[in-house]
Each structure stands twice: as C-alpha cells, then as structure tokens.
Image (cartoon, rainbow, N blue to C red; front, side, top):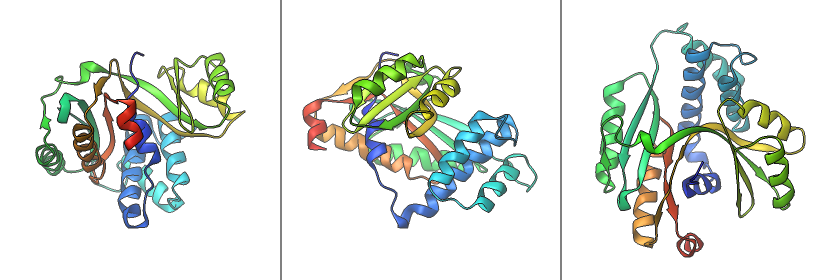
Length: 244
C-alpha cells in the first residue's frame, strides 16, 4: 500500500459527545445489520460481524440493541437494509469514498449529495473514484514504544505500519486481517479494528484553508445517520497538521 490518509488519524482523535451518541449508536447498529445480512448472524463464523459487535460494545451499545440489529440484518424484523457506496471529490481535488447502510436509498442519496454540494465538493458516478482505493484491514495500537509495536506488527505479517503521534496504525490484507489482529491482541490493546478503503496514492494538501474545507465536508458526511464510514486520500502537509 502506497498511501496513508491523515483522515483516519483525525477521526481517531474525535470524541463522540453525549449529544451525538444516539446517531453513533444508529451507525453501529446499521453496520451490524449489514454484516449479518452479508455473512450470517453467528459472529464466530462471521468476522466482519464480530468486529462490528466489538465496536458497538466499546461504545456501550446495549446487548438488546445488538441482538435486534442482527435480527434486522437477517430480515427477521421486516424492512430491508442495504449497503451503498458513494464516490466523489472534495476541496483540493481529494478523493472521497462514502459507505452507507440504509433502508431508503433515495433519502440517503439526497443527503450525501447535499453534503457534497454544501461543502464545495462534487458527487461522482460509480467508478469515478473507487479505482484509487483498495480494501485493507486496519487497526490502531496506542503505545509509546513505537519501534517495538511496529516490529511485532511486521512479524505478524502486517502489510504496512504507520507511526502516529500516540501510537501505531497497522494495515493488513483483508485475508490476513483476522490472523494479524489475533496475534497483536495477545500483546496489546487493539482498537479501531475494521475493514477500510485505503488510498493507493495520497493527495497532499498544503493549504490550511483547503484542508479545513475538506475536513468540514468529511465531517458533514460522517455525521449523516446512514453513513457508516468515510475514506479519503487526503494527505495533510506536516505544518498544516500541526495547526490542526
């Protein structure tokens, strides 16, 4: 993998406030429902579902909500949920991929399009952006011993390791994701474990104003209830990152 977007790092530092917890729980519930729909309702046999449940528990989502989301994904509660991918460009020409889970395709498309338009972006057609990304496993380990964690991650056959201010972000291939996470779980507290769309190449943005505009767009998309994840190839210049 050639690129590491700073958007993942910025999202990691964003705290979920009490005022937004209801929306956060809805996103987590949607992710669980989609995972169950795609791979079945048994988390022991469905790694994606297991990850979604783990993230929900980390955010204190009640077990009853989790069980209901699984049943919803399996079609036992009525109403069909589907996963949709949107593609577009933001300020500075940064490429953006948006994952959504919805029971109303028209509503979600309208909200996503509105966010792009309002924040100086443009929603693209299918295939206009996706070729710039590839699916990867991602996880984060908070540590001060960056060198040792990096060595352990590589030994566990991770694809790439990026050192950040307060820890290490690890990328794997989708097929080795589960094995690498299991290996690192034995030594460290692994968080933010999920499948992501990682940029093959990043687009460096050196202007603070443009970075601010792009972040506002990404945050607006991320705050939509139907959106489960956002991915960008934006690489922020170090001097601008320090200002943020």
